[in-house]
Image (cartoon, rainbow, N blue to C red):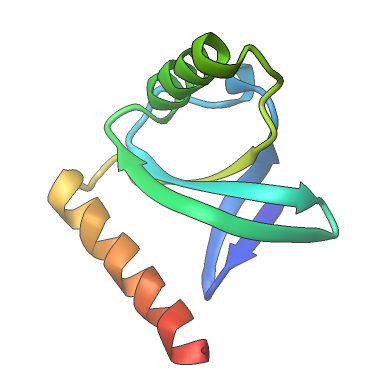
Length: 99
């Protein structure tokens, strides 16, 4: 499956970290149902899987609850952190132009 965020096609949505790969990428945190999802946050990481496992563990420790978010991922193993952040900036600009 895929999730269209702006003009970018992300893989997902995923509900479990086991579905993710430990590769660099851009992570979209989503809330809602598969038919009506809202973008909550967008981040980048050197390892998508490890990043989300750490966030899940931290959230579990703080709140003890179930993960209310789904994730969508744009893997980009050929880009460093600065270039991934540049892609995020472009995506945010797309959203700003829509408003």
